[in-house]
Image (cartoon, rainbow, N blue to C red; front, side, top):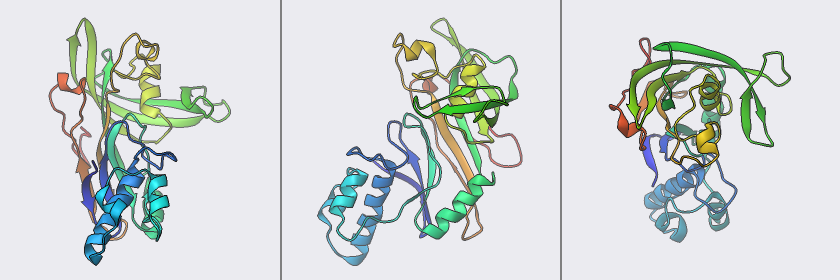
Length: 265
């Protein structure tokens, strides 16, 4: 079910559940774009008093392909501004007009948004807070990224700051809840950087060896819990936060996002 945090004629801010694609999936599984298109179409039907048998009654259940196939007048415009990995829960903003999409994309590219994450990592960082600066290179064939030397072809700087909020020993293993402020937006950035620093994310079946080989199972403990930006049309500052869900997060006290100007977590 689509959970909307904010909506106006220009944009929608929504919570993406774990296991759902941020963009059009290209298949017949529901994704965030198709869910938002269904929602917009249902609203339009209610306003006009018309009945749309599929988009209104199957709201949130149709894939992008099904929306495009069944929507005779064309699917509503939904601009994808940024993305989250499929297994990651978190906040995303989508544009409802092309003008807004360009403006939001500019904010992202210029680093004028604030993105905060919570994660449970395996291990205990030596420092209570710090910054990771690495260079990552994406392998499109494997859909993976790795830390490489900054002189390597295709290397891009990846930067984040973190703070350890709580550490506990659970079933004989040290686990830590960390708050993260993302300063760049690279492919699998948080997952790769923490893994390369000896602190793989709990439940990460791509960058944690035990979860990768099936020795252990669980959902990745990563949540895009906070997003702040200035509305590109109204000029109003917008702040949104959610609570992380999942087994690993339940082992810790509920964290809270603090925005702008002070501590990030």
